[in-house]
Length: 348
Picture 1: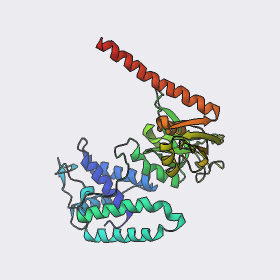
Picture 2: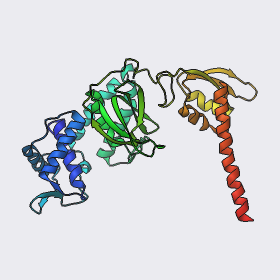
Picture 3: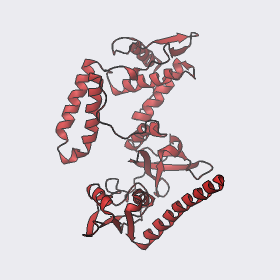
Picture 4: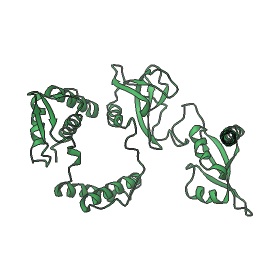
């Protein structure tokens, strides 16, 4: 395995470059790409030397790491893979690699019983299943939701490192409703995932107003030469305790929201609560329906969750939430009426 993390980053960067056959890669181009990758992922600003990248290429070509990468120089200047389908990421794990990773998984498994590591159980299951698939050449037996080609995922590592190094950012962002991108000078604090979509939380450097930006709508990111500022009112550990999803302002307060669920939906909601604050208020002995209550900030994600239950759930308090749901469901029903009218006209 590579001697250190920086070397691994360089190998993967060179690999990504050489797999892109729509561009010609000189040695200088590869040096620049490796320097940028190390800065984005590790905050290393001193760059990479030509000699280091030359040594990396020789290492990738050799059998020392098991890569045997088919790297060639053509036109006496440019680098590429002779096999267009080759990638070091497709290399199978060696026995030594497998044993090292298995030891790491075994160690993590011993920690998962501790409260502070309880959230690691799904990660451990992923790793264990992946190792078993690799070693035994069998099909996976654990499957997790993922969207591998989701736009914005490549920003996760750079943003993680920017947050870790407290680096103020200049972000070009274009929302779905905007015609042109808008620039933000943001002090980044947190990355949050919701329904396979990632969001960046940070404060505007000028006045510490909190923003949440979807990664798939970010056009570009670059470091800004502006002092980083912490927001004393943003507690990343507890900010989402009273919210479903990611939509919340600093001044938003949680409200009691009551809803009635049918017998069928009550069974499901009892075992998989809408929110951790959920309480059972009453149960109807005749029809099996239940009234639940949660205490959350009212936002679009909350309404989206309730709409997903269809006719099985009805919000009964507060009035503003009842009115919102009623209007949206009427709008949805009218769409079906419209299509029924079109279908009738076309069949006449």
